[in-house]
Length: 206
Image (cartoon, rainbow, N blue to C red; front, side, top):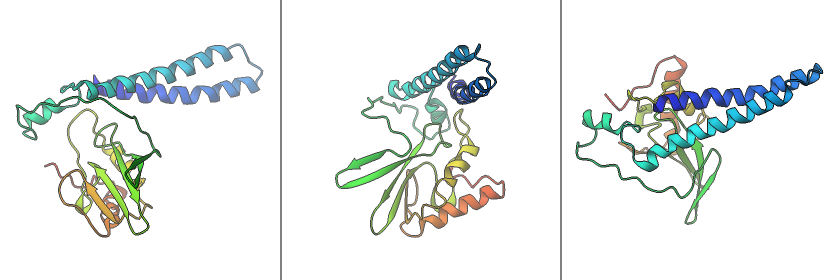
């Protein structure tokens, strides 16, 4: 179900984006008869695409263990069988480019899907160094976290890594394993080099 929501959201989003261009072409040809219909279709596709993403996000808020693949993770011994995911309320929904302020520090939101559909990372730039809070996107030695679940997408992992190609990250603070306190961009580069050879970077999950 969760994978169908993601695919449906993507398809509807593309339809909502394409239809306005079709509208413009018809307008130039003085064919106005379908203008209203196409406009309604575009708005409707956009609305349904957003709705699917809201439903998908609600799985986390409601703590649906099947939908977030937690039940699979328990069977694979990543979590104890008696582990319980306690749902929490959402104070703020963030998107690409948003700024989150914590005390005297500001963090930039970077959308980095791949390990999971709605995965995000944070970058904190200071006068001295640039820090990447990468979650499950990238790890020591350029490793990633691929897994057999519905919303893990290796192509999106590669696309997300390329967004960091020119960022000059000094410190990598991932969600698991070793912290990289110097020259973190070299580890990101190593993963990108694998992608450029059409090879999936080594996974920390094996």
